[in-house]
Length: 234
Length: 270
Image (cartoon, rainbow over all chains, first blue to last red; front, side):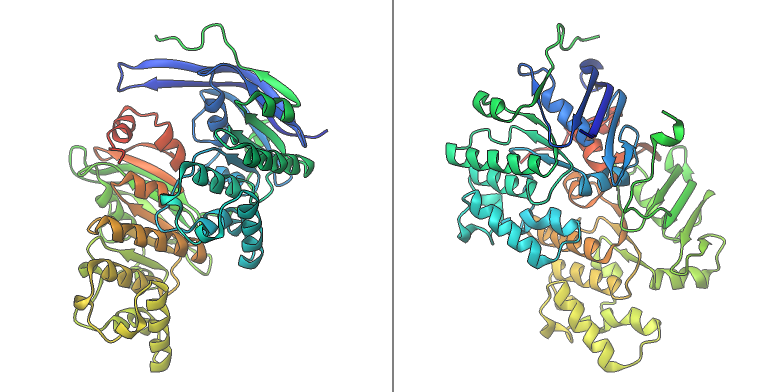
């Protein structure tokens, strides 16, 4: 199997200058690879740095050291130290991130929110709309909500709109941060199907799943993130 | 792994910058103004400049767009023909032409960017006329089309801007700038003077236009939410210097510099 992402000796430290310069070492010495069609599940108690790892891989957090290499447009690209425009190109084409939280943009209707990743890749509006509507239907978002901005939707509805957006296009590498948290059984089942489809299409998945049944249903391998001393002040 | 292998250029990204700034400096006093600013901007890229009042954001913007000569440093622009032009080595006439054609400038106060004594349609047509379009029908058609694009009722084409609300005036100013298909647009707190409800509409409009027209933008704002929504990357200024720069999400979610951490943590979450 071809690896799509390779992580070497990754470290993440937060230095809180406004709080007496406290330094928190959250990740260190992380090594793993994920291949096409494979799902790596992050394992460890709350505070072990699972979400921090996903945000570091996505570029929201700045690594303290190590290497994150990703297959992008047929070549290996080093994300640690990459230019913002390179990271954005990777986010457009290669690296997807699905969380349970939707970043609401005022005035933009749910349907547009879902279509955006496809439009950014240059899909036609017709194609994007067809796929977006199919996903919203599968995730049980009533049609009367599609043209409304999700700001006023319930938490669960916003989460499902965000899931539709996350699965709108195929991602060679996909980061999943508790995508099924607080979903009812039917909708969690739909997300499991979508994950299965992404995997069958050759995506490499890295995910956090709180629910044990779901975790066991999707995991090929686990990354143990439990550390003896998680964080220490200096 | 070799050094060359470590940073391969990403495909699908323009490989040559549009705008190159080196060591740009103008000081009015110790740490007043801006100093040592360098960056490259690529086609379609949106750069946000953030920082508190007096940090040098506006001085930097005036230096970037040719309004005020620097003490030292250079600003270079790659024009539509692909030739590099040194902004402050160019003649006044060349600079003016650039600002009227390939560049745009959206002022914080629309009254500074509009001609208040002529109609909305004439405001939109002005750049086209400067480029030699004389046909009345064409100018009129462009006016109607752009009013529609910025969500102003085309029936208002003959009205004076002073009869428009603040939000409409700002949208008219944007239309007036974009009609000449610029490659690079400077914006100085474009949503600064507007009500929040009007801001959202303007931001949504700007986001769409930036993507459709593949505009490179330098936007000065003190509003981090506006920066998050519009900017690909940020430069944080403090006391005339850039203290931190990088991907917008990273600067806002994981700021490194003590000042940026203070700035980000000081924002009230509604």
